[in-house]
Length: 551
Image (cartoon, rainbow, N blue to C red; front, side, top):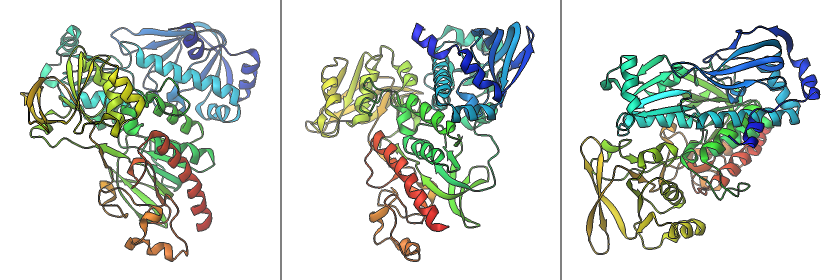
């Protein structure tokens, strides 16, 4: 940890700053050995050390280990405090003294009303979570095979929900079997997730793991929100930030975790304001904290299954027979990468065939040759990222011009990267392997020449399909299933409801008044993170117009 990182993550508050916090909390004495909050606890308090010291412990190892010690002027907590999620660590008094205890709701008032203190606290929270994510032996332990689809899904779930974890690979990590023996778990029961160093979940689904960790399990309100946002990618998070900051009671739902497709991007280099780039996961994490800072509720994983009307409000139906009500709805469910039309491909999904390139996938590629299919910006970013771990990245494009659908800066960097080999006019034609991918057959579509590339991993970036199946035809879509909005609705049969209101649909408004579509899910949208953020923020202005006109 650099000195700057430490100062950001563990700042010391001035006497003036502490005095301004006093009206929001209660001072009290604490004794050595007192447990102020435990890992797994929700709704835990924020503590400022006035005298003495508080030790932060990581309970995920066999013997709890020290994360840090907060001394006079320092404070406890991380991003989970703002979102009301469970604590990952335990806080225990190391040296007797005095503390200022501030409950979660008054802390939110501090964050909302005191920008200078808010900056210090939130930057510390973000830095602490980043440090936890980077540390070994922190958070969950996931034990499973690199060739297991279930293992890949669990790791992806942890990444998407900003959960620190350690992965023990059955094939490569000597400690994996030792841990299983200690826990009395046979390898046939893997993947295994170990929570807080003691609770063992055998081959859990992502929904079972979420329920166990208390993610997305909060009781949803029965009263209507002003705005319900369905989808937690850049567009949905932007709508949530602007909706909540402009006074709308806002709820954001996502089926798996925040970030959308952007969360799978190792580095976004052309997003305004980040000249050195930013990972999609980090961008999403900061956006979530920003939304929660302004009072938005973020519930993930919560999967939408339908949309209807109830008591004059829109009802978003969820798995488990839940539903939430909204006066307006923003649909930001995005799109998913298309699947390669290859025999046996479903056998290898998550066990050799992948649709994202993050730290998680890079672990699978160490010193290996890998195949990547696609020629867009996402494919280019993935190829460059994977080249840092893989010995060779074989990049397959159907055409002859890499610059046709890829930004120039990426084309130039790929040309300068020896580890990336671009195969023009080339397609993947077959997958080979037993219980895991072992080779990819490729063919030159001009000459007909074929070759087999031995590889444990194929990465697919070949375009996307909209996540609109949950709408069940209730909104007008184009021939590909993307939601039509604004002037693109001309001729759609369901726009009669606008005629009754004597107005045309707003720019981002779908075929039902008060429902808006933003980002990749919208027909004719520009598939860029910046465009998605712009549409999400713009939608809130239109939501205000709709709500004001409907009163």
